[in-house]
Length: 213
Length: 201
Image (tube, rainbow over the protein chains, first blue to last red):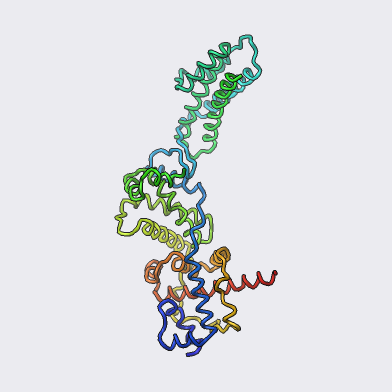
């Protein structure tokens, strides 16, 4: 048996072994023996290759969204894989009005922030805006009540303005949640929700910082 | 703590997570994703050589998993079952793209264009001990798609030729021939890479 003949059948015998002639050739031919050694070495090394790569977190986000669209998964929740969050919705027809409301609420928060940072003992007029009529009586949760109680004890002059700002921010968080529920793929609406949460965080922080002074 | 570790830490076994996922438990399914995403994605990436495609195919594999998990009977290991599902997803994708998974026109007789290998000083030129995994991964990425798929399925993922033949609709002989060619190509690439390194010194 020559090298050409041996290498022709090599694909079919490399794992199972060959007949006597083929094994004889392998023992006697350095080139073919080196070739077989290399090919087996490559196969052995390949078995040691571990799965090395994790997919981008957006893969999980996409999976979650697809399953939600198909109705196979309930509303999303905080996910460590894709960082999706639960998003409510805003009715589309009120979208432009709601955006204006957000801007006004944020302006109110910014104004309140300016007031608290540069605190003056004289009374401050509450921030009355056109959004006030749309806010309604948004209930405060336990944390809100705690903060309001703190502010009313430590900054009674600002209590009314603070409560008004907090009510506005809560109202617009609720609206933003509704909007995201209806438009889960709209990143701009999601950013608005995040901004609304941040404004609330600013309000809380202001009250907390003041209480530590 | 990742969702995958929570499955283990909370005492929820993979089997329990599978049962819950069958019932539509989204968190259990997310845990299964966490446990298996790396292997599925790595498989898709190695078989396609393309990150974007691999992400899409990983997504599709897990979507199919969610839809089909109720049919998992436990006759094989869950990872094996999922793995096979992922392979089928990739192969379906490649068929749609029209890529030749295996050269079905290839005769069983091996090609002779290269002639028999008669390396001079063959014993001194063997690869044994000289391959690092990074170079091997790079060489695998460089393989033509048909060779790469067979190589990944057989030598990395451990499928037998009869399984590969069934999956890819080719003969066992064809599967062996393509695998041989893949390994030969890798041998050339790795030797070239080693020679280049030696020249740089």
